[in-house]
Image (cartoon, rainbow, N blue to C red; front, side, top):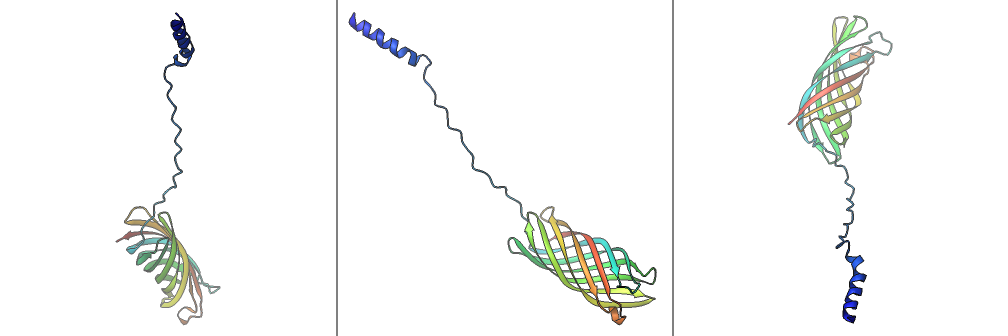
Length: 197
């Protein structure tokens, strides 16, 4: 009788502990490590060619041959991608429709040899450029031409692995244009599209 009482006492003491059944340990929450965003970067190395269209403004520094109008043309170049930084060289040509001095003349075309250097920001390239320029103009029915220089800045954005779109602002200087005694300053703003090879 004493052993039955001992078994009943043991069951009575253990009953509350077993009443809910076995307990399952809750798993510890998993904390994911922060993920750094990966910004896609274009490879700018190689040849490219394309076209541009823009607007030009010419100032003759008081000589009365000021004017503005449209210009557009073609370009081709090569770039070297050094990781975050890019360097390159480009040739471009613009045919112009810029009337000078209220019909006294016109700026007919501009060609440039460019050196470029810039930095990548995601799939965009922001660059500075400088180089030599050559311009043809007609004043009083006489064809004039002269060499000058320019500097400027631009941005190109890769829309896929072959095509880029961009914009460029250039400031040109032609001193004593073709011995005329007239200094010409020209500012151009152009949109560009290029195909990379």
